[in-house]
Amino acid sequence: MALRILFLCTAYNGLAQRAWAELSELGHQIAVQVASDADTMRAAVARERPQLIVAPMLKSAIPDDIWTRHTCLIVHPGIVGDRGPSSLDWAILEGEPDWGVTVLQAAAEMDAGDIWASAGFAMRGASKSQLYRHEVTDAAVRALLQAVERFESGEYRPQPLDYTRADVRGRLRASMRPADRSLDWAMDDATLLARIRSGDSSPGARGEIAGLRCHVFGAHVEPSLRGRPGELLGQRDGAVCIATGDGALWLSHLREKDGIKLPATRVLGEKRLHGIVARASKPATSVAGRRDHGYRQIRYREIGAVGYLHFDFYNGAMSTAQCDRLRTAFLQARRRPTRTIVLMGGSDIWSNGIHLNTIQAAADPALESWRNILAMNALVREIVLTDSHLVISAMQGNSGAGGVILALAADQVWARRGAVMNPHYKGMGGLYGSEYWTYLLPRRVGETLAQELTEGLRPIGTAGAKRIGLIDAAFGASGADFVAHVEQRAERASDPASVRKALASKRRRRAIDERRKPLESYGAEELAHMYRNFFGTDRSYHEARHRFVHKCCVAPSCEVAPVEAVVARDRATA
Image 1 (cartoon, one colour):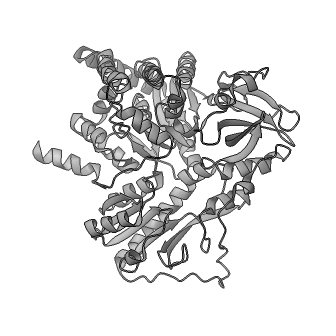
Image 2: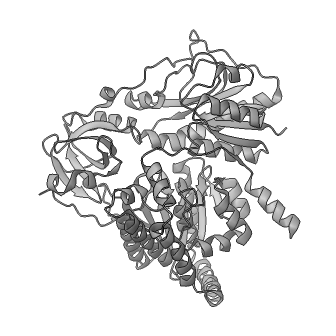
Image 3: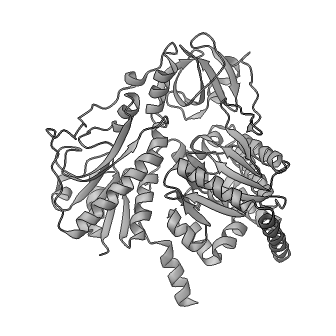
């Protein structure tokens, strides 16, 4: 039975989008309302008349006149019995070996309602946002699908929260305070990592670096550099290395009070970094047994005839400099005696396109926007025109805007099951987009569906993406499982005869496509639109970027139809 479901969200984030995709696959009709206040929630309920209300990510309470009349399922990122707004923060800080997600019914007390379902997962050494986008989201979807199925049956009775039960180990916890994760560089690496990760990507952990009080993000262990606690030991790719009580950490991003999150070197500035050694920033390599374990945003490794290019950019944003470095690394990989190059992206996010924060912080944001999109286009162009190697995009995490198109530049596109893609730009103030999307997207899904994907401003899950041809395969129950299967599949795909056949086919197709319309014509047409977005009199893009970067963007309500509905409509009218 298909249900009319209303999502109430503080933000339509990755978890909410994944939940929408999974429930839509089951045929449910879902409306999404960004719940800015109680009256907005009431208006949405009156308008949509839902059979079920779901709050996949909601920071405010649902009004009692709604939850007393409708079944409202709250997705809480904590084990059964856990209550409070800092659930995952505390789990990281206190070193919980495992954690979970609970789907409970809205009630008078926050997080104390009857329990519809729960699912657990093993914790790992990662930031709060990384855990949330992967383990939490996977567990939340499992629990939510079970809860919705139980609601559909009409026979299940949710279980009251009972702290006397031995298997209920959660408890009410206070909201985490800044002091709970403040940083003293004399602390050991493990303590500092837990504190930084518990506040990453928001609100950050407070510390002092080179005399600057700031919030700290993106911590990585340095294996060999040592110094006095608090001493800066080096800089690389926008990150700084700081000595700790028993080692050293690389810190990728900082934020001053009332500022925006930026690469650490950008925040500290030349004066504070005077005399700080710039450590080698060439991509770390793992070839023929050699391996560099130090922090790198870009890493390259080889297994047999396959080269794996990893680019792990914070939150998937790619600045002008990062695009240039990745393009250089790709060209170097292309010169290796391999047959296949696998673009691995990061373990957390594949890519989200141009770097809006560094653009916002630039002296001339319009000019930096232009430089950034030209650098993205140069990278994409090299991938599209590669005819010496089979190129595979292996998307371990979510992607958006130009990041989706970057993946489509490859010959084959594989994605981790459950990843969410947003192949559109217009939500950023009507931004037209480039990266040769007007060539790459229709090449995959056709003109009509390409227009629908870019105009509809909606996410698409891997099941739907595979069905319409946006990607070639979706597999992997977890990140590690996905990577293992990627290596197996890439090895099989790198058979010499198979690669020769694939490259010959690619050259023929590119020649046909080029005669029909040169690749550079697509780019020139897109850039003409982008020039107007960046330098024209309409300031919509700049205003939308400012709202996004400064976290004051409020999205409207929307009713999202499955992509397959568009396909069915097109077939019916063909």
